[in-house]
Image (cartoon, rainbow, N blue to C red; front, side, top):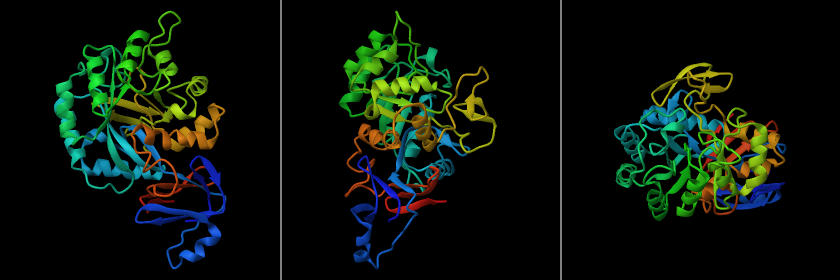
Length: 380
């Protein structure tokens, strides 16, 4: 593949070509050397296009009229294809707070899932049910306290595919639960919480390493009771998810977070739901009716209920709201999530030996093509 500028290991390079063999990047060579690789198939894009690693979304519930909780092939295939159109090559299917039996059914479906036609599911993000009822946001009122036995049952149903668990650290049993997650190489992500600063610090000491959609569904910042946000911002080992759609966070807050966490500790996520790619109207999320109006999804009481954001839109907004460059914003949804999931030896950058998960953007940052393991899953 040749033509576009290539974002390779954080730097833009020109007049280079990528050689792909058996779904992996075999080499990055000067474009003039391509003649030595004929009669192999040669794919060329315009020189004013851009080639980046495939985007990775570690927090999404649905798209294109479908939801992860639908737990059927039509829904998951529809989500996979919709994500491919926005340049996503890997994602964590994110569950909602629900009765244990319903969550178990979703996890069993995921465990038996065959290869998807577009973006690939590389694990599960369990968002609830171990969250604070007072900060459940658009989640249903069926939250439970952190329960190690229940988690083990869920992980068994998921065939060990649960990679992230969002939980509120102030709940009874949360600290031993976090320690258990850490011992089992599962990420404890602090979210949907009314925790104090001290309770959040205790969770970080116990092994929590991530924040779920920072600021959103969290106790508000106050000068005498800081709450969870400053603890998460100041901790050096905490990755922070942020939803940069202009609705969930004011641009000034995005800039503040960027200046404190910098490019290596931020993860752009969409938290998208089934209304993404769909017209304005009423939709279902976690058993509740939500309304999409002008790119904003809310419950009847105006509580935000996920988003219809795409990751390319998040990248553009990140550059617009802060002083970061495109390459840094792209890192926040490629290398950073890959590092969190310990997949950064396979995906997240363009380099020799890595999976050929690639996105071609045009000069307007529209997705021209998406490739998963060397095969196109979307072409405009």
